[in-house]
Length: 347
Image (cartoon, rainbow, N blue to C red; front, side, top):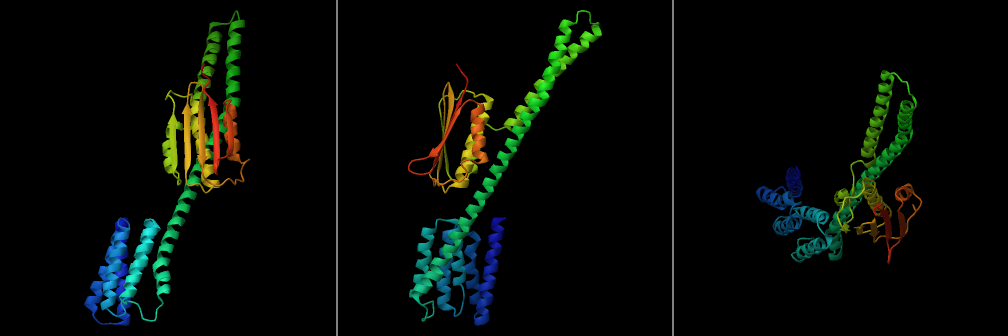
């Protein structure tokens, strides 16, 4: 689909350049048609070979403008360099963009009255600046979308956990009471008819089975299928580079610790992406026989306005429920550092 759009863009650019040129000088139609197609053809590969396309278009523009009066092929080359700045690092694109303007000036493809500095700024630097600005805008949009998705996942997970606690506390309590009462009646009733004793036994067994099934369902709802094994996918979705290091034995973790560890890292990454200008985030996880230690450090600014926000309170609640500790402090020399320690409850 991208290749088809690029090919259509190249054809459209060739048609526009040809039409504009013929409006000024309706002569040399064949030469102008060939030059217009040649200068626009590199746009068909502007995504895969952006610098090559820009340089090729600029070379055709220089040659065509030198031989065809009032032919606007340089517009296509300028657009090609803007596209290259969108897809590649701006510094080499800027150097090539200014260079082709200098070559064009030396070959007098510009009017004699045009100022060299003005040409370089407007036609050399400006397209690169526009392309790079569009790339930055795209990056911010992708980061905002990623943050929205992660925030949505977090809110859904927290709601699942809340519902799970409510169901467990309410329904689980009643099922437990039913089972205990049925069992107690069977033990104190010495002359119960066999049918009644069998019914009470069935009630006790059914309530125990229902309680076990509710706990299994709530475990699935609460955990939402996520664990520390899913951290790589979480890191890959982040718009800021994330370094993930895990040390210690790879022994199976208690499900509650495994899931809580994932949620802690998820919330720490969300905070780093949302509230700082970090260019790198380091996640370190160390596991030993007694505890799981999690550290998330970023190199962003140390100004944060949500030190008592819902996300951080949720992190603290998860850690406290597991009997662990949580520290959130400014990092050295800048950024933030989140440190959590979750006990494993092993001897």
